Length: 468
Image 1 (cartoon, one colour):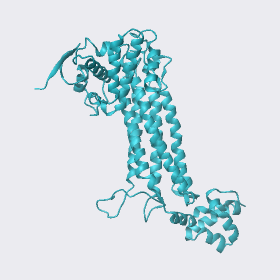
Image 2: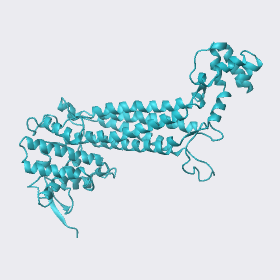
Image 3: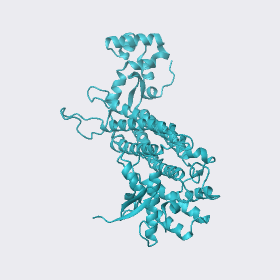
Image 4: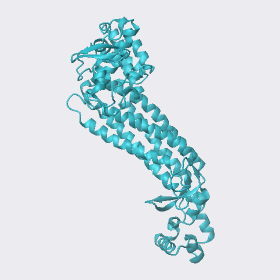
């Protein structure tokens, strides 16, 4: 028979596994919430951030004389152990839960209390010496501790995502340099438009993604505003004078983040606008990534019957029935990841809207949506760079041949021959299959060979200058 200890709360007594650092309120959450099957430990940065918050609170309470210095020291050292990831396996509550995150907060309080008891030479559950609510949760509520930890974890998680996105943008820029002398056809509405450099096309992908780095930075600044010290609804009930400001300073020191105490703690306790903003940024980037992957799939389509201007790295057989078929599996998986993130944005939007009066109780699903979106996007961005972009090659001769035989190059003749004449040439070329060159130079002799060569140099095709 497994050994256990008895713990109680105001609902009654329960048996807790003797070796467990969590307690009765965590046990109740484990019994009540079976939603995602994904426990809190799956987000180690969130567990770490909860320990940051509890350590900051203990130090502030010590400084203000609310907690005995020795007890506060034990709590702080217990938090240090949690921060290392040593006790991640004790954070078991489901990521989506009722109660506005109370079960997450109590999971942290109970684990830290029992680790502190261990450091004091006491047994787990001897809460008269270090109590989850009275001591670890001192001067706090779930309603300020949970969102503060959430915002710290988001900040740290976003840094890794930002780094991955910057590396992907750099990879596209490097391809842009590699393909700078490759002539290809630009397309609008999937129809031939005007010539361009493949290098410029890939550099534009880099620029497109680098814009998102600035939006991530903006979002990180927004979520650096915290409501620690607000306690239940922002009135600072049960928190000593000066605590909010002091705990914020301790958290700045502990985390290294530029955290700022909200000016209106009542507003900050229910407001989730920063999450909506961040979610919108993630959706915006997902949309851009998906569009880029659509382009990569089109540009590599074929190989014999498609555009086939580029080759994606062949990673795996693409069919169980068609020999030799290789699919663009990496762009496809990034597309699918983007669809998830776009959907998660609606979840965040609805959850943020569902707030009522002084609290938004839907923050757990917001945290789940944002954490998973950032994780999935980070993985997708790494995969796209490592498994696809760095290995892309250009079919330069084929791409140039498409340009030379395209009717789209007739646009270059507008300044010389006028729109009407150029349109007639285009119409005849499309009807007969003849080239623009054959009609304009050889048959109609509207241009000399020298003029044609002047207009259709590589440099003038990719960076046109006005020629009459």
